[in-house]
Image (tube, rainbow, N blue to C red):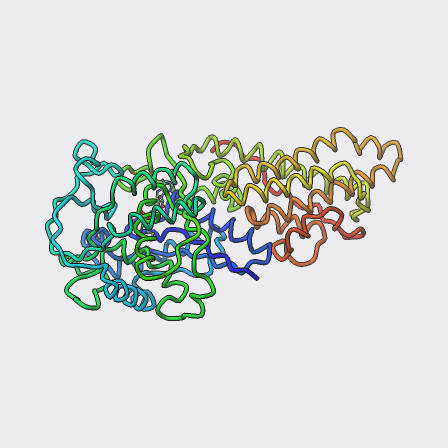
Length: 505
Ligand code: MSP
């Protein structure tokens, strides 16, 4: 069994979860569930990034301690992931003792390697990003991401010798072109490295909310240095070497484009310094925009996942963000577009297909599965759906992957229109009716298997209505995508519509 380790960013709990956070987390979950169906030993990690100035200030503004603040909001992230059926294996909080143990070990290793030195930092800092900027990166004197004023900081800090890693990083990316995806992001990273890398400040004395440096505890670790290490400490770095050996290096770090530089420049350099392997792929997606703007606490344009789940259900939520929003470029979120696609793809195509096939099977075939034809006309469409999903999932193109599955749904609906089983039934041609319905039910079984990573609930319900034992997520691919596996004689259940049509609210 091969291991497969997927991570999301760990979110800042100064804020409550919104659909931007959910976007990455659902993507990680779909990938996780997909790989589990191939029998991989998948480890899916998410969590919260609990140190730093941003959290300290948010706590002060609320009149509570940073610890109280993060306890409260970290729990909200965990609740949201439960609501969205996220099957994470762990949830790391950077305030946990296991994280401190790993961070301390890592810091000492990098310090002993001579890659951390004392210096004086003077420059510009954006608290919202928890990042430094050069004068020329600012837009109208403000942070290019948050559009807020930066702060002038002078401090005695320890510096990480990033400049030493310029050539090793370029060499690494030349050897492993797949290590940053999509390609446009890789070019961005290479461009940044080629401009020249400066050492970065990795400690603070002006705050105390962080992990103290083992050799100089007046300093706490810079929040990004500590945060990136979550990917290692969660799988046992510093506490459980066997587990670390089993899962490291990560197969995918899924991140938003705004934090690519940290993941594709700082992080691999830190790992090289500690003598650890580098992640196989950092995949950066775009932003979900609302009214053309990135969602932000200050912009008051945040949308809570729970509000959309209340209206579209968990599966409807997951479908929209994975299929209607491409994973890579920026995408505009609109309620109207979500509603339109829900009605067309889920209510009319998928839901209606399940409903009409099961209804006909109950009315014309006594509610029992007839035989499937080995060479039925849907065999090729079913194979194409699986191949299309598989090849696109390998590129994290969820939208095209599930587009291929929806081709099978459409092909099955057209097949019914062409064959008109109701007319065959009226003409008393029971063998022909059974052949058509048997093929449609088999197509539905395959749709249930393939939609399982994306829409676990509807998939399991369809599986049950097809009279299948167990659950679709227990099936193993590629075998379960093969044609002709629905046993004749299974008892069927018609059930209520899987996706009731919605009117605008
Ligand atoms: N704590 C850091 C990450 C540390 S990882 C070692 C952080 N946290 S964050 O909560 O601000 O953002 C986490 C992720 O959410 C980022 O990948 C960011 O791109 C993503 N998103 C936040 N708003 C978003 C959208 N509007 N759209 C899509 N993703 C967005 O950065």
